Image (cartoon, rainbow, N blue to C red; front, side, top):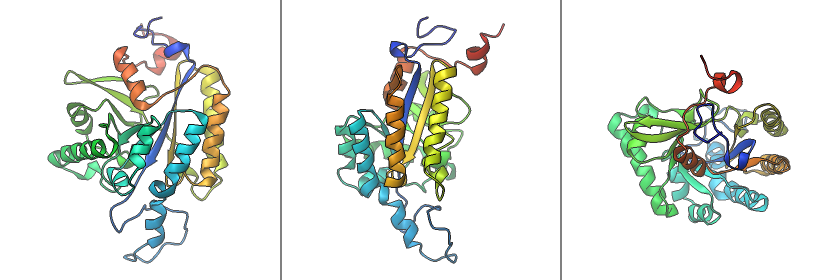
Length: 290
């Protein structure tokens, strides 16, 4: 079966499963922090939340370096989906990511700069601004985009294609990546995850490991040519209590043959080069519709 067969495709080297690592490197605007944290006591409205502000900056200051160390030790590629501001205020991070041959993708300017709140011209300007800043800081123009909190507009996909992006990561309705034709240009639909590390905030971090282990085991055993997107945040997943399980899941999966570890951009380029269109679960599991 060729890569572009109407019955589907095969991963390179007949890999049984494709695994990607999505590392979200985020920062909020000056004086702001994430609307969630390990603290359970809310402050009175209007009170500056210093705990939230500092907690949210851990990723660029400390967490990203621990994840880079783990990926280097395990010899796996990753994609760092970054707010441009996070790279701006943490000198050297972008260069370190690229030096280790990981990908830097765009994630708006700051985590609270949501495309869903912008008009058409503002949205295009934000997407272009982030590409320009990341290119300046990392020395390479980003090929992928994931909107913060997956909050995009019905224009986002078209704007990204027109601006030269290769992949767009806000797809919640598919299991496998595939090429989408937008005005004669192809952008790769990249499935997101339903279980990033913040799902275990204030809970047992082992649940994050067990969820990805169980998912990997099911896909590996039951669905050849499957796809798994393992997602973590540098400001949470980069902390020892979760990073221990990031290291653990990578080591676990590396114990299996036939796993294709790949960056988002390299996978997306393979999709484009092989003209991969959507392979629905109906066709995958029951054969092409009559």
